[in-house]
Image 1 (cartoon, rainbow, N blue to C red):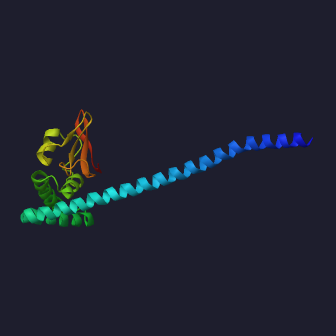
Image 2 (cartoon, helix red, strand yellow):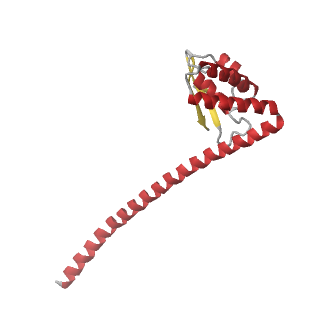
Length: 180
């Protein structure tokens, strides 16, 4: 009888042990998945900060190399901030669009010019690729379904703002700025 009880106890222990191991493994897997998600969020945040700092560095180079262009970029930034406060002001919108068109074509590194062109309606759906290139300069990326302009085309390995539009039979549409 004693042997029978010990044998049953051993079999029960062996049957429960794998279930406990699986439960522990499931908990550890969930913890690891949560940690991965947390780290991925931190990476995205750091990539955005790197892009912002590179933009500041580029602005510093522009200021040093070309004070007139730097002054125009500051004026555009001021107009953009004013437009955010008063989006219905047509005079502000027109002045910002004229300056954004000038800066976007002359030097594609003015990200704020992209924002003004998007919000001001200069980059619109059904726009032809030729018209977009007249406004933005030559595209830096062309795939089967989309075209794009890199904020920093010489450093594609780094995360940088990217202006993109989808190719459709009616022209370009779905304009947006993303980090790539």
